[in-house]
Amino acid sequence: MKLSHIEHIGIAVKDLHASIKFYEEVLGLECYAIEEVKDQKVKTAFFMLGGTKIELLESTDPEGPIGKFIEKKGEGVHHLAFAVEGIENALATLKEKGVQLVDQQPRKGAEGLDIAFLHPKSTGGVLTELCENKNKS
Image (cartoon, rainbow, N blue to C red; front, side):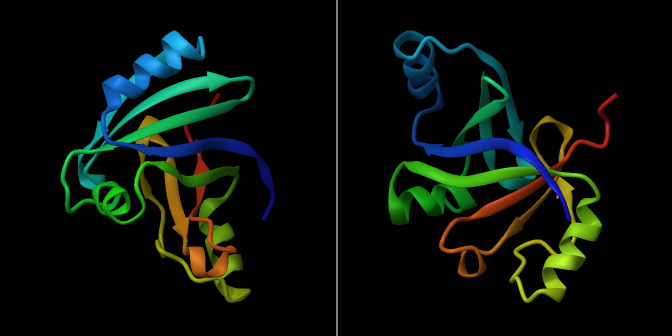
């Protein structure tokens, strides 16, 4: 398994539009995409900073993963995502090494990426996401 770069940093927020305003008006970044991922019960907003994206995540359902995260821990960094080629093989390799997987198989995430999460119990307390862009040119 070879990671190529940090794909994005996911940040849980209560109010997506207020957070977008902060990132744009205070930090000077530009939101280039807003997308709802219905099966994950989340609405996302993306910013690019250098070669890394920042993903803001607002829950669309208090019982969704982001809603539960905010209820338990409050707003803040939710996950760290790495780009990988061959996500299925990466998951198999990690499982062989004893890493606890949240997702046994990749699923579709925002921006059309194939994604899978690794459990924080196996990653030093950091929810870790693997991402693969199978549509890149």
